[in-house]
Structure formats: C-alpha cells, structure tokens
Length: 272
Ligand code: 2HA
Ligand code: ZN
Image (cartoon, rainbow, N blue to C red):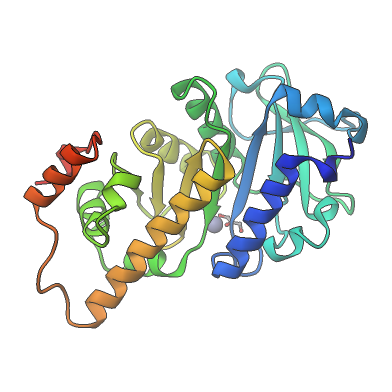
C-alpha cells in the first residue's frame, strides 16, 4: 500500500489539520509523533527507502531501538501537512542502540524531524514501558488560553491542576492524575526532555510555562481530546477571571463524590 493511503497517515493528518484550525499552531509551532506498530509498517514498506544518514536523536532511548515513528518536520507548518505530507512530515527509524535516527520516508525537500525529538522520543520510551506498549502518540501544541494562564496561576502541579479541574465537572474524569508543570526552559533540548519525562511518569499532561502543552495518548483521538479538554478548561478559567473571578465552585466534597460515582482514581494529593 502507498503510505499516503495508510490509516495511520489519515489519522495523523486529520489531527494536524484540526489542531491548526483550533488555533494551536501558529507558524511552525507544535509537533506530533506516532510510534508505528510493526504490522502497520509492514503494510507500507514499499514506500520506504534506505537510511542515507544516521543523525543523533539528542537523547538515549534504547527501548525504542528498531522502532519507526511518523513525525512532523522541524520548521514545518502544521497547516501545510494536509496539503503536502511528504514535504512536511517524515517516517524515521531508530537505530539499534537508541541513539540515532534515519529518515526512511518524507521531508522530500530536505529538513529534519521536529526540534522536540529528544522530548518526544524520551516520552515515547517511558509511556511504551508504562502502558505495556499501548501509548503511541506524543503531541505538543501552543494553545492560547493555557499559555495565558501560565502568566497568572502559580507554576506548581497542585494549584494548576485544581484550578483546571474546577473549570468543568468532567475534567477530573478525563485527567484524574492531574497535570505537571515545567517552569520556563529553553525549548528543544535534553533538559526540557528530562524535565518533561520525569513528570510524565505520573501524568499524561505536562504544561510548559509560557510555551505550551505536552500530552500523550494511545491513539490520535485520545491525544487530541486531552489537548482540547485542557485548553477548554483554560479558556473557561480565563473567562471566569475576566468576569471578576469565581463566586462559587466545585468543592472538595463534590470531587470526592464524582470520583466515587465515576470509579476514577482521582489524585487526591492534589485536592486539599
Ligand atoms: O516550533 O513548538 O517547541 C516548534 C515548537 C518547539
Ligand atoms: Zn513549542
């Protein structure tokens, strides 16, 4: 099968197009990666070429040796992915040590995978292990309201999570473990990768202060849905604060009742 007809390609492109229209991807902002299952790679192997050049990942991911990823390109625009996938995204293969990658499809006008590759692959390695291989998607975007809140809310997991949980009744059901907050850091390197991976051990959502949001998911729907849910909570929060702040809210008791009724393992350490 031509790789452009593959179901995973359709899912990847749909996410990039929808997310651009959400306003989360100005210019070249944001990045998306998908860990391609062996059976899906086997179906498209005629579209792949040999690796010409092995380049450093910028992180060490031995548990991803031999894995293939569909990735957005560094400096490429999300809005262009649906128009011309082969110029804007790539399939990469991780070498047998988990130190280098090679391009096997795409980026036909040249270019490199996303500048956040160290964070993406570091988190793929972690989530592959923690979910027994179910997690396949890592996604980073620049959603407006969430970024705005990082100038106003205290930059700690507990206060940030509680504020967002309060913004819609079903939010604690969607991200019951809460979310982690990384302070301002230089994008694109091993340091932000390590800080994010450490928080992703506990969470599926990580805020990058004054920059954006990082999420994971078993599939594209789950990753997109998580981004959308957290950004919507942030939007409600911005509106509530613009209207003079909360006059009433969801209480600690309400959260505990919700957790009981919905059988969710709510992270109560973030509640009091
Ligand atoms: O420009 O979003 O974090 C791509 C990014 C880097
Ligand atoms: Zn970014």
